[in-house]
Each structure stands twice: as C-alpha cells, then as structure tokens.
Image 1 (tube, rainbow, N blue to C red):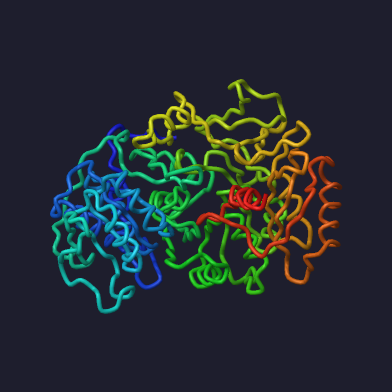
Image 2 (cartoon, rainbow, N blue to C red):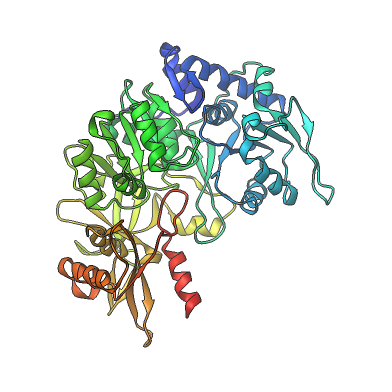
Length: 538
C-alpha cells in the first residue's frame, strides 16, 4: 500500500489524479452531468466564490443539498479552499438544523432549493454566525422565488443579523478560479453529524488523510473499484457510507458516478440500474429486502452489476443468497461508522460468508472486549473496538463523549459482535439493543435473521420487554409478505420456526404484526422506538 503524503489537500489530489481524463463523465445526476474537467473547474471556482464571500481558511459552511452534481462541487470546493464543509442529512427538522448551525458556527449555508423552507425556519430561530445562504437549483424547487443575485434574508423577530441569499450558478459564474490551499493530511477537512439516536447529533471531525485511507484500504483492494466502473449508491452523499461510495472511491480511480436526488425506493433504484447499468451498486439491508419483494424486480440481463455492498445493519443470510441467485453478483456485507468514515470489517470476493460481516479490512485491527475491557473468550459476545488510520479526531465540543469512545489508538464502536474459529465476525446488535433473558444475552439480530428466513416474513425487529413479573422476554415486531395473515396461527408458526433454529430461550414470547418498522434515514431499524412504544403502553 502507498503511504499517505504528509501534505495533502484531497480535492487538489483528485483533480491532479483525474486531469488526464478531463472529457470523461465524473457525475451524472437526474438532469445534468459533469466531466472530470468541468468538475475541476467548478471546484476551483467554488473555492474562489468562498473567498469572495469572505470565508477564511478553517471556517465552516453547512452543506445541506440533495444528491446532484452541485454536491461534490461544494464539498470538494470547500476542501480546495481550506474551508470545512459540514455535510448534514437532508431529512432532519428545522430544530435539528438550528442546533447544528449553532453548534458548528457555520458562516454560510449551501442548500438545495427544495430545502430552503427548512433552512429559513432554522435560521429564524438560530441564525448563529450565518452571513450567506447559497441556493442550488432554486427554480425547479421554488417557482417564482429564484434569487437573481444577492438579496437580503428576513432575519428573525429578535433583530438578528440578516443573511444574504445567492443563486449558486450566478455566484459560481462570477467567481475566479482559486488555487488550492496547501493543507496537511492530518488537517481538519470536513465534519459529518452522527444520527443523534441517543441524544443531540454529534459533530464528527475528519481529516484530508481519512478520505485517502478509506480509498486505499477498502475501495481498491476489497471492493476492487476500477476506472471503467459506473457506480451508484442508494445511500446519500451526506452519510459517511455514501460519501465513500459516491465520491471518494470512484474519484480515486476515475470511475463515473450516478447520482439520484429522490428517495431510494425499489422502483427508483431499478430505474437507474436498468437505464445507466452501473457495475457497482451500494445498498442497505432493508433496501435489498424491498427490492427482492418488489414485483418490478428486473431480470438479470437488464442490469450490469458485478459487485454490490451493504452496510448500516447486518445483511441477513437469506437476503444475500436470494439476491445472488437472482442477479448473479455478490453483496459484500460490511460494517463501518461515521467515526471510522467507512467500512473496516467486510466480506470479500472469494471469501464471502453470508450471515457474517466478514473479516477485518487489512490496515485495521479489531478486538472484542468484555465490560471490564478484557478480551472475551472465543465465540463469546463482546464490545467491538477498532484501530485504524481513518478514525475521526474527536466529537466537536463534546469532550466527555470523545473520551468515552476515542480511547488512545482505539475506538469503541458501541456494537456487539462474536468471532468464530475462522476469524469471521458476526453482528450481535448495538450495545443498547442487547437483551438479557434468564441471565443469558440474546442478540436481537440473531433472532431477526432467523425470522426473515421464514417465507411469511418481509422484515422483523426484536426487543426485550418485561413480563408481569418484571422479567425480560423477547418480543418480535413482524412485517409480513403479501398473502400471509397476521393471526395467531402465523404467530405460532414463526415461534416454532425460531425454536427449531435457535436455543429455546431465544424465541420471541410475543409477536406483534405491523405494516412497517421505524427506521432511520439510512434504513436502520430503530429498536429504541419500539421500546418507547412498549413503555408508553405500560
């Protein structure tokens, strides 16, 4: 493996790398495309625009945009200028954005036109240090309100400073080409915000070198990404998983990226798979399950996928096997995190075992430890610790949480895992999701994986609930496939099925049939919401 250079501006590194393929398409979205040459020019102009707006090195901008060709221009343009982009989820509430604006102290907001109502609502209650709002593609999203040039925002009722609104294309057209600033590989490059499922979102601070390492350690040797690939990620660019999938990895080899602004429904995904015929597809377990259950599932000869990946949650073995039977390509299931930026344990081509997360990616070290921090016995469930060069620096302005998770060279992930005799790791659930029944740990994921193998089950989530004696028992929330009745007979059949495949104490004592499960924007099942539902009914 090459050694990461001490001086590295990742944006200018990519521009130099792809200079020989200036005419090749880099990004293709729903309405436009950018060649590598056009991308490099717009990145340099974006850096110039930031300078004209008065942004200085190491100051921050909020990146709240849908997946269009403008997203990588803003992200890379900020890196090019030494300005720090703070990429955030497009599905949050104005209250969430108000918190992030205040917490990160961004000086400018770059937003898609469709998201401007949320931006304006957030800035009305917490304008912070924001002086400029730049609107991408406003005409399509807000007919009749497109700003033609700088104009003043309304400010808030308390007399907070007003901000200027700019049209993205107008701003870019008037900006000079700016040279890249010289940055170190260990220098702060960008932030991502964690999901905030256990409290306020955490600002995860990453470096230029972290991007380089994920491409060198995972994308090239494990994923095997190539210059002739066309890639498509259902996970959006604002996620750590999606950022690697749709920007870092393909641009590190000169591949072409398909971007999709809309929500990744099976139908929307099928449309891109058959129209653009990507060779690399990145998904999540719930999407793969929905794709296989869809009557519109395209036949193998209409797609060109050679390899797929999955992350976010453990991929059930049955889903992986059925997908491979249908499409003839493997899904490389793995685990990554916002803190580690991308995947650090993964299945690999030729060594794939569905039902496991695979083995550590070369360049990363993994340990399973007990509650006292000591290594667990072989085959036992333990807390997952990771050591690797793509680890974030810290959680911004959250020293207590930083100290809990960043332990010297090691990161405590918050995930539970087991490791078998062959070195394959199997996900057991989040630490907060583990269930203790009769003094023994039950992994909700283990029970869920058995349930979804039954012909009647589309999705399942398992939690622990106290019985009338206060003893914790397992309960399953189940989404059935069409044609199966949510009745006692089906419930008994599912319980019997789990008993046949797992130790008897693990079977769900209760089964609740539901039409859908609560999920995050990335498709992760939110078991804590099911626990809250149970608590509210007590």
